[in-house]
Length: 413
Image 1 (cartoon, rainbow, N blue to C red):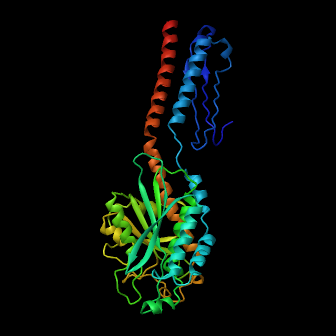
Image 2 (cartoon, helix red, strand yellow; image 1 turned 180 degrees about the vertical axis):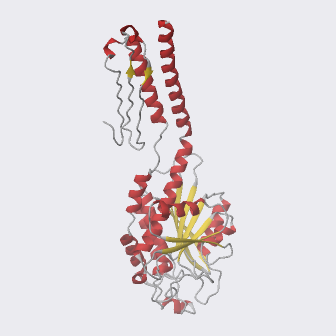
Image 3 (cartoon, one colour; image 1 turned 90 degrees about the vertical axis):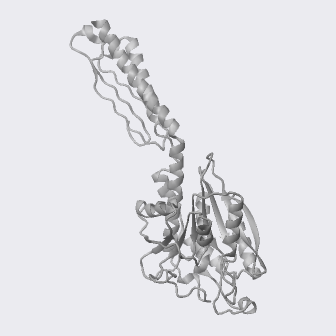
C-alpha cells in the first residue's frame, strides 16, 4: 500500500506470445517509487507478471537484486534533516506568546533593573536559572560598568557538527527611567522595562526553550547582557555588557556566522504585528533566513528591513564594530530617527499590559524558523557523501538490469 513514509517499487515484466521467450524480459513496464524522507519505514513490492512461475530463478533473483539496490540508493539519497518542514512548523507553532508575556511580567516584577542596583543582580540570577533549567551550559561573565559590578548571562547549546557554525541571540536585561538624574534617584524610581528590554530577554529564553531539546549541528548561544543603558545622569557610553562580551570573544578567536540582538519587540501601534530588522550589508545569513521564515510559515508579521550601518543605540553595535555579522531586531520604528514607536519606554509605565503577545510570538517564531532552516542546510552539506553513495548504488542497479537483459538477449540469439 502506498502512502506517506512508504517506499514502493513496482516492476512489471511483459512476455512475448511465444512461450519459448519466457526467459527473456521483453521490457520493463513500470518502475515507480514514492519517498517520504523523514520516515524511514519502507516497503518493497516486486511484481513479475502473470507468468512469473515460468521464469528462471536467475532472472527473478537478478531483478530482485536490481530493485533492492535501487531502493537502497533512493533511501540514501534522501538523508534525514534536523527538522523537515512539517517538524519545523510544529516547533514554530509551539512558541507561546503567553509564556513570553509571563516572562516579561516576572522580569518587570523585579522593579527597576538598573545595572547598579541589587535588583539587577537578582534578575540576572533569575535568567541564569531559566537557562540552567533547560539543561544548557550557563555561565556569568562579570564586568564593571561605571564602577559598579554587573554581569552577562551566557548560555550555550553545543552543536554536533565538526567545524560547526555558531549563532547568537542576545538581549539586555537592565532597565532605565529617564526621570532619574543620579544613582539615588535611580534607586527610588520605577523602571519596569517591560518592552525595554524584558520583551527581548523573554523571546531569547523562549528560543532557548524550543531549541534546547534538539540535537542541532550548529552551536547556538543565548546571552542576556548587563549594563546596556546609560548612567542615570546620562553619562557613560552604555552597551557595557555587549562590549565586554565582544572583546572577550574576539580575544579568544570566537567566530559567529550570524547574531541577532532583540531590543524592544513588544509594542504595537495598531492591530498589525510589525517588527524591523536593522542591518548592514555584512552577509548575516540570519537576515534572509528570518525574512524567508515569515513567508514560509505564514506568520502574518510585517517585517521591514532597514540597512543603515550608522544606527548605534543598542547591543548590535559592538558586534558591528568587531565585524561580526549582526542585526538589531526591534518593533516598528520612526521613519526618520529610527527610534522605537513605544511612547512608554524609559518611563515607569513601560509595563507588560502595553505589549502584544501576538507580535512577540510572531517575531520569535520567525527567528526560530530561521535558525532551524540554517541548521537543516548544514545537515544537507554534511549529507553530501551519502547522496553520492546513493547515486552510485542507483547507477549500479541500472547497470545490473541492463546486463541481465543483454545476457538473455544474446543467449536467445
